[in-house]
Length: 465
Image (tube, rainbow, N blue to C red; front, side, top):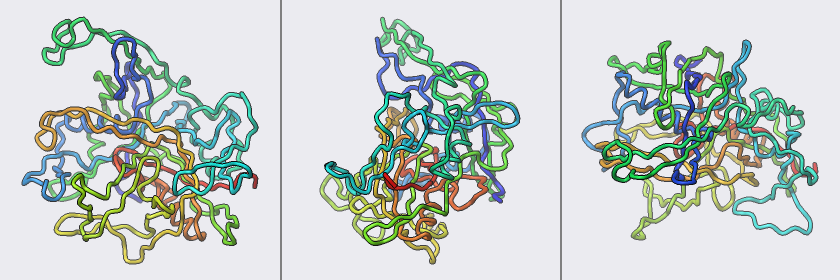
């Protein structure tokens, strides 16, 4: 049992909420502030609340090598969060909802999208390293599409058995738990903080806000691992939310009350770790594993040369290979789809006095390849940084990233049952733990600590089988 489990927290807005992205909000452009917030929004809220609280935490220096200064100046760097997810209050048990897997296409909630082993008389151009196109097993129809969110119970049945029937009342859309409200405001001059002067002279704007229904909450997870004066580790979230917790979430300083919940385990669906479907392929048997994102993931392009043409090498002098990133996970080889994760226990080794990740001596590669994928269009992830003495003396806009949205499905073929189990243990957010009190795997290259890259595994079969 983890002696310091992650905290399960429900946020109850006391007013409308504003979650804008990087798109303009001027004139007739109403902004997109009523969308469900991304994980980095609630992570920033916890960071800000910790700084305002006066709680002490040891300082972190997140810069590397020559960029490191003589003074560590980042506080609360151990904070990890996940969520938010919609939660409906009611009865003795709260109902959590999660983004619908994108292989469920219509209102029947049947698993209709499946990789095709072969389609006659059809030519396609798949991006490397994909080997199989994904086909729809349902006939053409104008029936209603599948709703955007699945309840935890329905999601668990979807993972446990592909043939399980899901009911339409176990799904919901954004409009079932929130309403978008449009308002008109007057622009404020950033220099003087007044309206009608400077850059704000004669400017108004329209914006959309999210009003959550009375019986709905934002469910999040948060934990810190700060060093105390005695050298012991401690979680500051309990002190931050000591019965009267409040958080300012999103833009325009909107307030939410925060309530910690007592739960037996993290209320996220558990991924499959055994009994995967197998098939015969090119005279060899394969075990079929699919991975579904519960939260968005960011996989950046990895260059192999510096701007001046110099090859990039790692600390051991080995050349870095180019990886396109984007929709393709950085831990999947871009030419043949080979999974580059390792099985076995991970550990932290020290190199030159600084920690670096490693694995135990009995760890090994995973014999599995990515062969198909269902990836919707990306979502923009950006933000605004306040000025600081470390790396942003003037503040300003953060880098724009394009994230793979939650619900994306990745299909893998493993060469043995053991490889399939090792792959699922590496991709499931809970690892091999079936009664998790914390989040073990975050498979997003960037912002994993903010809740990006959570996923669960299921199994799949080929189209027509």
